[in-house]
Image 1 (cartoon, one colour):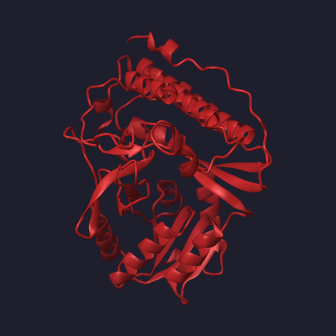
Image 2: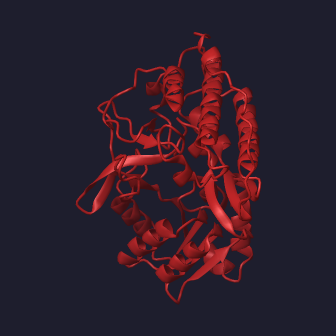
Amino acid sequence: MKNSTTSHLANKDDPPHAETPIQQKQYMLTGDLEGKLHQFEIGGIKVPDEAFRLVDQFQNELAGKLRRFMPQVQIRFIRMTEMAERITTKANDHEHGAEIANALVVSTCSEIVQSAGGKVLEINRIIDGSPTNTDPIGYGPRPGFPSLRNQIAALVAGSDHRPIILIDDGSFTGGSLSYIIRELKSTGARVRGVVVGFAFPIAAEAIRKALGPEGFLVTTEETGDLLDWMPDHDFMPFMPNCGRVVGYSKGEEIYPCYTHDGFSRSTPYLLPFCPMADWTGISGSGDAEELRWLSQYCFDQTGHLFELLEQANHRELCINDLKWIRPAISVPYRLGDSPFMGLSSVRIIEHLVKLKNQIWE
């Protein structure tokens, strides 16, 4: 295995931070990278204990950097396994607990399904990859899974006419959960309620509207005035579910794009891939330089992680080595590039170095 890339991934010193008063809000950072590493193991890649320690350090340092960038904002970090336990406990203890226990639980979050039982709906928002239109074009399946229409039909068929309860980690706009509620209802299914860790006010309003007067909404976290919410896996390229998946619409369905060698593409929430401030809600002194440093840090830590994986597996790891991991890993995509260019034979560490260098161009 080559060791020369370590020097290319070395950290630069963090830049000085100029503090600027910001309206007091909360920023939610959720952590599920440990679970993503377990998916590597299931996919045939040995993961050493050092990799789990690196991820733990990354989560702590990422939260610390956000606190320095936004000193007037309360940064809250919570692990998804912990949130899943809180959510399922609240659901069981709720006045509708007996009804929830007898319903089919559906979630977009695997940690919650493991804690509460039920079925996963593999759904995500999809973008078309255009640098001039960064808004999602709609909802589609996560890469490697059937169409949403087929997934929803399978969920309804497996419900055995029981009511359905949606349980998820959180909701920013309510768009995803409202879409799922409407699609389930269109099949004749009865969506009885929604249980979430937290919901922004606009999200709660949208969810209640989609449920109708017969439905109920339960939240478990006291969140106050939320600025934004980000999962840690969106800051680490080549992790399952990282970034916004690139896709296209065909009739009434939306699908991910795939390269000729079978990989989907997604845009991480980092520079140089996307308008990072808009997508993450991270605000500081107003200097874009801060986001460059943060992006470089995330690239560096991802590179260190794959160095540990290479050492544990006694070989270089190429993109093609990730093909058996589920949820499927998407290759990082820069807005405006060709989404169909195959990169399966490229060594992951070398590709990370190439992308990181583009931050400073």
